[in-house]
Amino acid sequence: MGTQPEFQLRTQVGEKGRLVIPAAIRESLGIEPGTAVDLRVVDHELRISTLRSRIRRAQERAARYVKPGTLVSDELSAERRSMNRVVFDASDFKESGAGSCWRHS
Image (cartoon, rainbow, N blue to C red; front, side):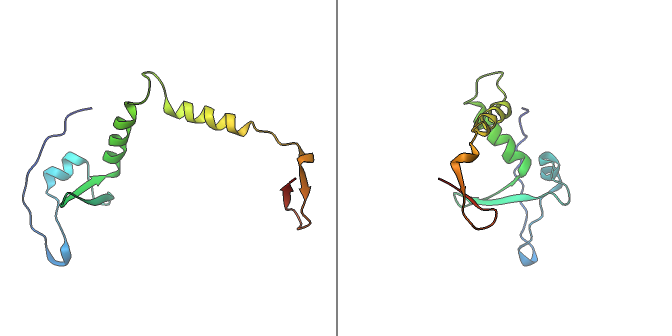
């Protein structure tokens, strides 16, 4: 992934606590009107991030634990399929008498 340019700009908080993100930073982060951003306070600093940047960071962290060439989505799908293979015999269940409710015996 490309290196993000660093910015250090000063701005002022306006009326009603509004903060204007300078155009150069918005463009660098891909923030357009209507883009949702997350605000967090970490170590007494306000951090603003986009969902896209949070996903990218999570993917980079997860990549450390995945073997090269492995698709995590394929592994998760295979795991889910194997969990769905559990088959119950209908004789293992009894009608509870409450309409369509059944319970395991």
